[in-house]
Image (cartoon, rainbow, N blue to C red):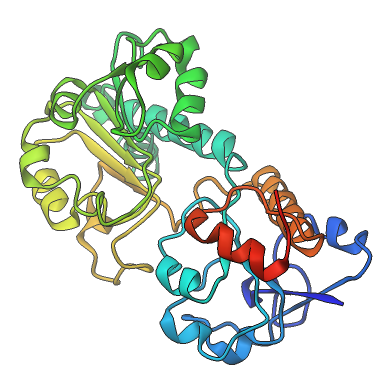
Length: 339
């Protein structure tokens, strides 16, 4: 029997599903496979939690070297999402465990969330809401907004989310978008109607900056004091990727100095952030607890992808969207399978 574990954050303490639909019918309809929720939630995940499973569908917890000590049965960790910075890839590869992500399943929802924030920031939605609630109706003339029309979007990371965002924004009459992505060539960018530029050009020319790249050693603190010094004072920055890509201390300085117009973020350098985080008190900042894009539709699509990847492994196939592809040859030998 191929045994699958789901991390405990998929289930409430009384054993009911936390989310409406995560594709479990795919597992239910697969012969020779059984699944259960891990008994406890622990991060990092410990080896005793993994040793009885062939595959794990994982949402939030992290994995480190100790997670795989003495674990021999596990073949794959199927990450529920597209980020994988919480998973120590080297530790997984050393243990011959594949890591997969649900590439593509989040594109629509995250792009839609970015558009929501662009409109909310530029039309000063929260500030106008407070005017009414605080009885400051007469102050409304001091809170003029701006349209997306004729503005320029700069995208950091032109992957699936970034390209979906470009597609969604076509109706708003914006200028041709800019993108910084060293892994995309100019010809491919042109097919999406996007001009590739270097990071500093993007910071200088954009009216909106959307951060959509993964957090890696290469992108950690990608945007710091110097990069923030290049932007227009009217710029809005939106981060739906990961905290740590933009240096929070340097960002706070820019917000305090009013050298950027506003900021919206779903992610923080430390999650959850401390109770005294200065971002809480800023009127031109919109915050969400790493769930701005969470929708029933997105969770259904992520779930179906993750469950299908588990079935592929159970059937002796290479699953879709493997991150640590460098171990595929050894992994295939382990399962005695071929392409």
